[in-house]
Each structure stands twice: as structure tokens, then as C-alpha cells.
Image (cartoon, rainbow, N blue to C red; front, side, top):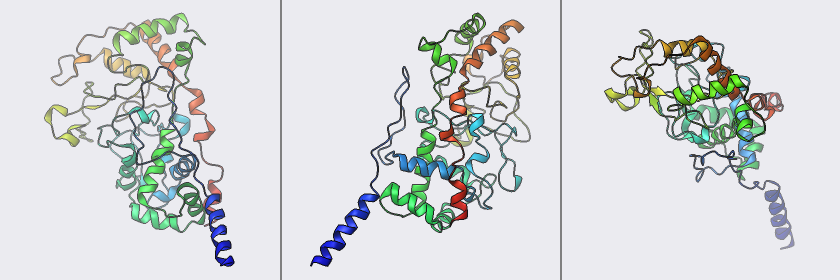
Length: 344
């Protein structure tokens, strides 16, 4: 009887050593709306966020063990990809679209340029299984990661058991990406009364409110809706945008409005990365053919910006650069990660 009690006491002590910390709450910056993400079935904890960060940088999520999420989403570029106009995946396969920046995802109602994914918990499945990206299956990833004793320990700490499943992998990645919040640019400091715009930036802010704010609404600087911005379709890519999801002809060539935050780091621009400079984007909108049949209504009015006004607008847009976010070491390559690979 005494031996049984001792064994039970030992079991309790072991289980307590793996106690999950309290829920992690998504911080909401002052003046921002409530996040849209609902975590009812994916309770946020620091341990699960830590696993998600490690998974984000783990090449084993790809078929050839050479491509990670971070391969196309660099922390130093606000989790965008500046080396290529179009994403590059396994075996140097070239994708159809530019890799979008990743931040403030808790406030987004859908994901991908065409809104194909409606919940962040499922988002990572798309690049993982896409033949031009990571070309892997969750089942095979689970097999690989279960062989790593360090992952088993991490999952034990996070869930109370060492079971590694595809669902947990996706949800942990979602938890990490939920922490990627960019809200401390000069613009935000101005709104808090800590800094002031220069006269040039202030003039640019007025231009933004007049010409850009209807689609790129404050404070997230996107409405996260889908618009036709008048880009001539690339005949090689033949990308029909949101139509590929809805099959509604009215959605042809509609793409999600990206955030203007961190533009300094997230070039090239547009869904196909065709513009390398912010100035190129402004030149597109000022020279746009307003008679295009499916052009979104917000772009119908003429946009006549002088060269000086373009400089002023760009000056304001650069106040949306969040250096603290871009260089936050909580988001970078985990220091312990090489240990994982060498100690399976």
C-alpha cells in the first residue's frame, strides 16, 4: 500500500513539473479594435507559442528538409520576402504570388492574397502542402518530429503529454504568428503624443487621408477587403485573384488590400511583386486608366499628385516603419534551434 502511495505521489510530482502556464492574452494596442481571432479551441500559452516559433524556423516542415516558413517570411523584412518578386519554394520552384508580410494577423478576417483561408489555425497548411512551396504532408511531418526527443519534451510541457499531432503543429504555428504585432512606429508615437510629425510628414498624412484611407484604414492601415486596383494582368501568371476562390466573375482580379505598415521593409509590392519602389506604386495610381470596367470604385476619382506631393506622401508612409518590431529578437531564429537538430 505504501509503495502504491509513493508511486502515486511521484506521478503527481512529475505531472506538476509539466504544468501548463496560464493563458496568454493577445495585447491590444491603445485605440485598436478588438482582435478577430478566437482561441476557444486553441488556448494561447507561452509554451505553445515557443513551439510555434521553433516550427516556423524548422526546415523539416518541407519535403526535402530545406525550406521553412522563415525562408519566405524574414523577420528583418516584417516577415515578407524581398529577394524575389514571386515566392520561391522547394527545388527552387517559383510560385504565382509575392510572399505577403506577416503581422497583426489577429485582426485579419481571412488570409492569403485571395482570402482562401478563413482561420489562422489552418493557414500554415496551405504553404506546407503546396507543390511549389514546401510540398509536404502533415502526416510525414508528424513522423519526423516525433523522432525528435526535444520536441516531445516541448509538447509535454505545453500540453501535458508528448503527443505530436498535425493539429497541434498548425495551432502552435498560429499561436506564434499571433504574437507578431506591429504597433510602435513613429505614427503610433505621434498618436500617443510622444512624437510629432515633421511638416513634410504632416502634409503627407493629409494626402493619405484624402486619397488612401478609404482602403488602407487606420490604425491597421488596411480594410482587409478585396479590390481591383487596375493592374494589367500578367499573361504568364494568369492570376484571376479572388475569382479562383469564389468563382464569381465579379471577383475577377480582386486581391486583398495589404497593410501600409512597414512598407520600407516589405518590397517588392503588389500581389505579384511587380513594383520595387513605393514611388513606382504611386506612379501606377496616378497614371491609372479610370475607365477600366472592373476597377474598384475607390480608385475611380482622378489622383493628381505632383512630384512634391509624392515625396510628402512617401515621407508619411515611412512613419509607419516599426523598427522595434522588425528587430525584435523574440521573433528571430531561436538560439536553441541548432540543439534541436543535433540532438534527435
